[in-house]
Length: 437
Ligand code: URA
Image (tube, rainbow, N blue to C red; front, side):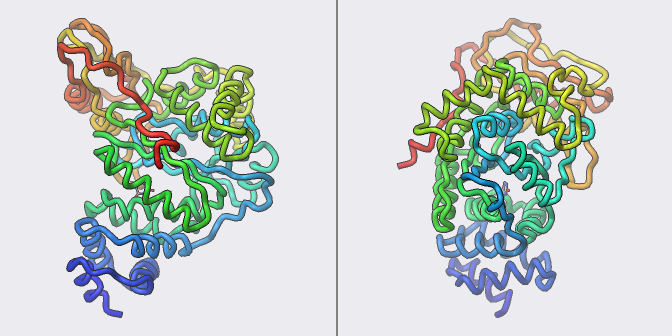
């Protein structure tokens, strides 16, 4: 097969066969096809899309490019969850303790943050000594003994996606429905769970800017799961403004722990409890979603989810004292307050700009190699729909370096829109699994 011929055919909107897609992916992963040819192919896909058959071939070739996690030793249905990424998204840290406290085993592989979106693995490393590099044996053994583990994805799982994703990240080829769907689903299928809950984010701070595109992505991923005999449930959720009030690794961990103590912002609680209800139902522990939700609420109110987080944190090398008293976690040295430049209603808080402000403070990485400062971040004191007076505090900024604060402030100023009309509160959940008929 000739790589240039395949690129040309994709450019001319022609459909490639399974063998041709596998040839490209396997050749690139093995280092036989150079970056520039793969980048040209990916750009042709971004512009001309892929047929269903091509997307299936890409997903399954990437899934099979490395090891497939074997969770057969863990009894019961294993349910995984994945978010397409956003700002302030600390969902996993509350969700996994709740779902596993309700009896559904959770073997969660998570990633690090890149660009303006955060990653669960960075957040968990705020617990001093927390290990995110569990071996397969340690990972499975912990799920068997305490019901849950959250670890970083190892290099031998979907190496093709790892290499292609890094190339997409530097060639403007991330935002493509078939490429995102195959990237996410290849990893989820290789992670070994029986059932998968997907949180597809939409809005200014997400890859999918419109609800229509988010729905298309959700339907593509559901179909890919079905072809691999996995049940997939999708939520479409808002990522125009950050989720919850905390943005920044340690502040998000503190907010996630507080949620397990029955506190925390309403949008975050609603999302976590809705995802948990679905996972508990799919895991066969509840007869329906309503019962799943009651079980999730009970795990929070009776303290069992908080105890479960304590177990996860101490089992992975840190100390449960940080869960019982999150005030012990290391936070930034200085605090600045950003105030309202005028009176009115908050019309919007652009998530992407807030994510970039966190990155500017040192809390996010521009390249995979960057070392990040886990102690910096922001607390939103007002959200969309809140009335404000001129000079009223809108946000606390926790920082360590004055120059970085200045850069962050420029982005924060642009992120807020204040108007005279009350826009109402933003709904966090735009579509639930039952809305996909
Ligand atoms: N997350 C992924 O894992 N892959 C993508 O392509 C986009 C988001």
